[in-house]
Image 1 (tube, rainbow, N blue to C red):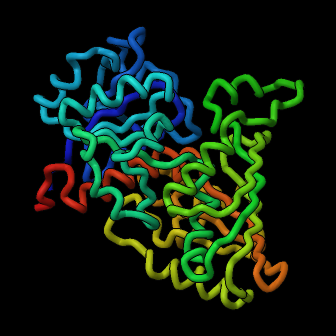
Image 2: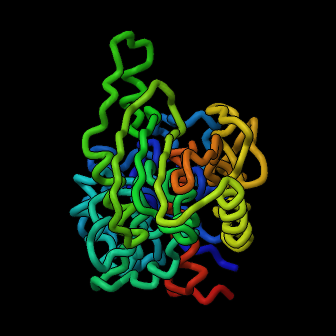
Length: 357
């Protein structure tokens, strides 16, 4: 099977490099171009400082193109590129992503710019895969993955909501520095000043995306805080349901949903979406693939690592109130891995002009 030719929009950011890492040996997609900010045009990809903890894969010699060049998308489309993965900041994505999509290149975005736009699918493959069939409804192919903070909240709550009816929930998050980009990590290194914990706008985005994905209109209260940890978003959730629920009900519901969503088809899909260790270890549980946690992860080789959501400390507070903690890798499942998984879903649904033969 010939791999589909792709471009990454973004050259030096953490999510851009996660995308490059994932595409290095991807069985369905081939990284053929990288487009970044104008001042990086002409630089080679291997000259960009590699910011991930894992070793830089041996990329093909690629020169960085200007992502703002209006003629570039058509040029790359004519060269056979059919998919773009966007790691652009939202302030650039709002103009650049439609320009690329209008060329015929399907854009799968990690940015928040179009997540609430009607006609632009906002998709989590395990929850609302059918929504991806709307891609192109606005006249060009653009689809969005969700905010990184949403994943550990919505993944466990979805099966519980569908079985018992979610009335309300409250969440407190502890979010990693990498959610603010490499500059925040660099700034905190050796910095003894107190960390600015508040994350403006994060709770609003997360709640809006939750409501759109599940078409839900209950009551939500979300408080988002930054913590001194490079990777991994941790959430503490309390949820009230319309119907009575027991601890056995919770475990049965989550494990049945987990089994139904075990996925062998898509390269980036975890073996199962949820994992249930007895206690949370934020270091040991960062790279879960749905079966095991890797001590020496290599996301360029194992596309499933870091794609599972950890759920722990499940308890019933009363007959209709549940509490749990959840944890996920924010730049893999919550960003680059989620975007690539979304494109894999589109590929398997024959939405990318492929026949899968």
